[in-house]
Length: 118
Image (cartoon, rainbow, N blue to C red):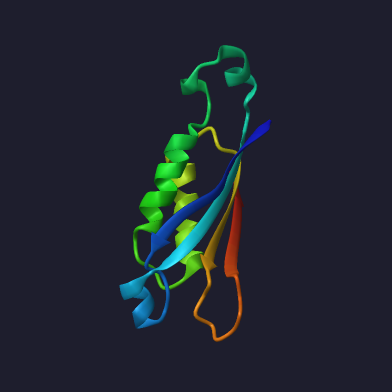
């Protein structure tokens, strides 16, 4: 078993319950970690034997581009697609963070973290 981690995927997206958030948007950070049996690709050196992190990054960017009110909803969609499109994944965890959220205080970010097992 092994892990593949995508750290600090930065995107601008339009999530939130406030009308302004869906118009102006905000900056987000997404971290995604997946577990898979990496013994075969470690020996074969063949991309088709592993979890392609380019595919994972595309899933994150595409799902972040779809407006949602809640970060929980976006995080679940990312996990749903990862598991449905990449059968080698056994476990996954995603963290979606809104940078400088509009919550009336000096807060660097808020994050939602979801995980799932196959």
